[in-house]
Length: 349
Image (cartoon, rainbow, N blue to C red):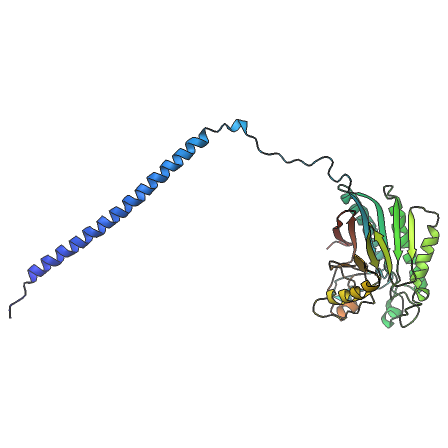
């Protein structure tokens, strides 16, 4: 057998590797030449574009100016709606019973009513920048007194029902007197509905609820006191509902205790809409406003009011959220309807 020539094979292998390396280099050079040509073309295009831009005389072109028209809001007219409910003016909330989440007594109550009054004026001032507001609806929707229909209230309340009536009457009068100082308000409408806490019976009444309610006394006394004031109009209905029309839109005010809600998925939305749909069969309204549940919620076709008393031991027991004390202000514009809704927080966070 002939012996292989390893030297020759080694020489041939070296030549093969050299040719392969040469071809790789040639391929890389070709690729780089392509990139260079594309870069030169792009450079020429950018140079041409720059030359064109350089010919523009920027001194002849100014940025657009957007200015607010001095007449903005002229012709717009709105009605302010204030929801007042669930003050429970002499309820006792001991911070120790709610893990320090709240404190409530007559002094705190008085301070919160003062904060509410100030914020109503603030809302009117803010919105009058864009719309005319000379009409206000101050809805009194019940549970202004805590009463003693429950055993724990008998043990802890800061006053008797008659003392609460006197106290609540004075506080509501103070709010109304302050609003009357606003000379731009030409009319204040006060729809009044009774709540479920103000009754003098253990079980709620239907047709006679108004005559068994301490709050009816409060409303009647207020209506008598302001009988000579032409700017105020009280609406005292013996029904559980008071319907007011604002620019052709009907708003139904009620306390809210007829909405059967025991908690569950969806919150107030499902039971409120069920009740509203049934009531709308008798009289269709644009918006429902109610309290009772001590929480602020806007459902599109209804507004649930917060409370002035705030979080208490009962709310903790039924696993309700610890909402801050608040009432609600919203605006109804003549042409566009609801244009602003604001929870009025009555204490600093």
